[in-house]
Image 1: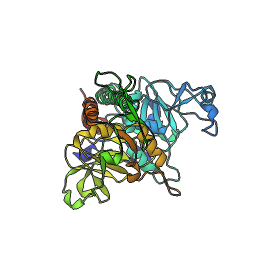
Image 2: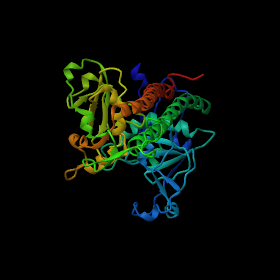
Image 3: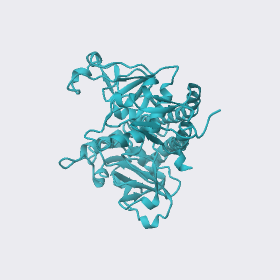
Image 4: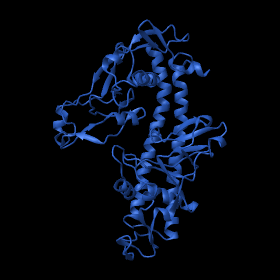
Length: 437
């Protein structure tokens, strides 16, 4: 059964036909250029970091990394071109399918609103009578690994429009394509909705933490903002700032201990492990899954009480709350694994690690040897100083913050299950093994 779900590639002379099986022999074989038009993104000006390109902003710009990070739609951006930048680029319409051809090869996502992108991304617009941008997104999701494997190891791992245009694919009728999109798209849209809710919850959580522990306007005994209502503040020499009376200075290590329990492969048996890995971890917090028998030492054991943060810049802002239900979970040693010293303080500990102040500490203290990427040492990470509230205040904060965390965790877990369902359905729908009525 598993073998039938794999991508089937047949060689006929010099012609490689994707996904041909005995189930879809009645489908037509077409080149992808028969389904729509491919056009390369534009970024003519050099150097690409010229400040004039971005002056004034106003025109969203995405890179290959943002295509890879998206699920079905690209709904956010970090950079914007100004008028000068737009003049040497192009603003693509919402609904355009983006395909990466360098760095992250053959990753795809659809523009949620008009955006610019560089020549390392190709835009695809479907012929309405032949296909759709959503269906082509699933085509590339289906054949991505094959494309990546075909170029891995070349002098420069990349592809071009000619390569994409000449790919042959067993294409189902448009009516069947639409049914496939209906099934897979419904799953992906639910994933995107969940992710959007998680983003909103994240913003709410950060605002709550900032209000309580940066501005010190947590509710006082009368329910009014503490500092703004004249709450007593005292100078602290260690922190070099005023903090609320009754609070104490401390560090991350006051709240949490660093866990570095190494994996013992002999004790794992044959379980299917949840494997948290920084390079593989996606925007929906889905872990990879790995057979225990293939796991080597050099990884850490984690459980639901742990909080993971990356050692590696620029991933310091990646913070994870493992939702594993068993002890069958591990993570790479590129993580720092924290465990709260007192279980009930975990939501507060997570909020501290998720704060902008802690992120600034991580960035500022990261170091690198010649030729390597910047990392932060666990003990340096744990030296971050903060004002630790009295127990009453911390418990009140935990009561508000914990439900936000639990809602996020539930949505991430649902997304994990939805992703597994979509990934199971994709090949059997694409090769005709299963049909949609």
